[in-house]
Length: 219
Image (cartoon, rainbow, N blue to C red):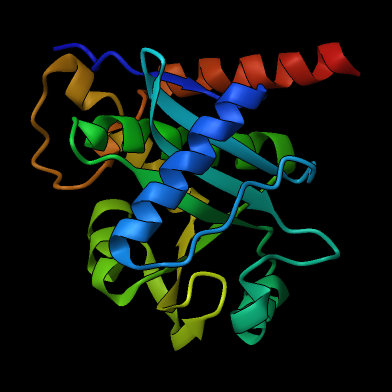
């Protein structure tokens, strides 16, 4: 079994950013949320898109904690500060949108994995957080191992209720070592999560090495 025909890239062109923004607006409007555009000027945030040919089918942004904090600090600063005091180097997932008319599970898993690799290898992040609508909380808990760390609040950015969820990137690494790449090998691990759809440990190490080499080349 092979991976679906998806390309993963950072939308560093005007067309790429436009495609990601349009998908966010379309998917958020369908859910009744108020969307927000991509922030292409922030060097501590990178947006990854999954594309089927020229069509953007999914996008998410990963943001790294800085002295300015995270977007989630607007609602959950106390909870995030507790994680920081415990030694966590945080990143957050925002602006997640996927077109579910196709085989988006594979693309979504790949984009999440790349985002986690980028945050861990390029910025030393140890933990990830995400603000999610209550209807999606069980999905992220089941599929990625997130756990609720914040009570239900109203997120003014999207005009919708949200929970704060957290996952350790050490836990993610354990899952990759255990079942990463299983889908591509046609192996049924029995794990009902995204992790069998992640890259294999060998692929992950190759991606990390290429990211670090690209950073070294640009210095």
